[in-house]
Length: 350
Image (cartoon, rainbow, N blue to C red; front, side, top):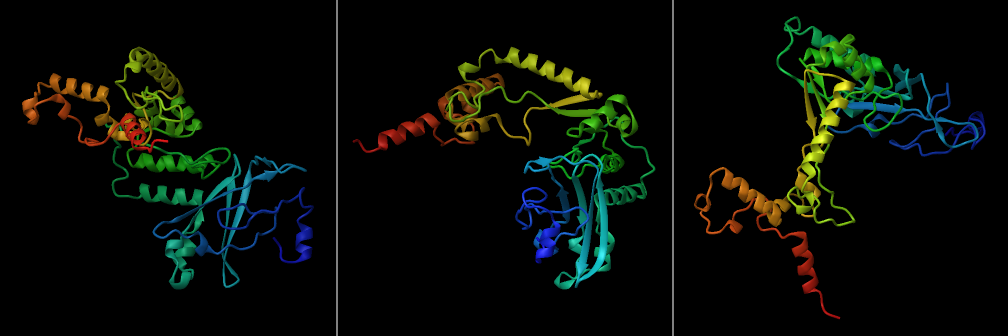
């Protein structure tokens, strides 16, 4: 907020043209079009060991209401000052929404956070930053050589959305298209997660899309087991629980429907389904987490059957009974039911 009364009056009517919010880093800050905000120390944004990619989202305010209105074709100016003097000014656009990004070269500041020529040179808007990386890739000695065709190389390339939200860094399609050109220089010929407009390019084989249909990784149907929650379903995270009988046919139908959707959205030579993100285990859905594989009698029996199909016997494990052969993960753990029963028996009687 302006420190003087005249500056406050210039903002308009409180509750209509502006609303008081916190001006701390990471919080909302009121901005009036065409008026510079109060300065924010760059040191307050610095994360040791990481380059600063600054994301700014502008929420418009509807007349006489506090609810935010989505803005389009937003232009944000960012000014860097040192000892009261402007050392760099940047302008970044969000043609499709209110989110813009900047690469701030805080890792190139000098002693006591003083600006250096490298800081001034390398601090830039996200679009220029993406273009700079693409130019670097295209000038490498091997850049003119053929890219892989038979090998499938896949990655994520997200960050664009015509709005704001989790993982959104820009509302400018050109930024993402430039990034896709860079990953293509690395040999990437397929994608997992990317905005819908890129899938449209792949489907229509237009622009960069024609080079990204070698492979596709899509989200599958997930683990066909209940998740442990307040309902405390003991079948949670247990693929061998009797309650799961017959799920195979249902899952096959779901997989076929998912494949058909993925093929329609963005066809590829090869499609892989990722059942769950970030490579967890079906046992994570159980109350005992991964220890479930050792504590559950149904899972132990399935494990024993698997071993017998491999031609293994108790002698191979130096054991006299199958009950002693179980997964090493959670070997000595107790099941949820056993833990509850032990707690109940240990409770003092009333």
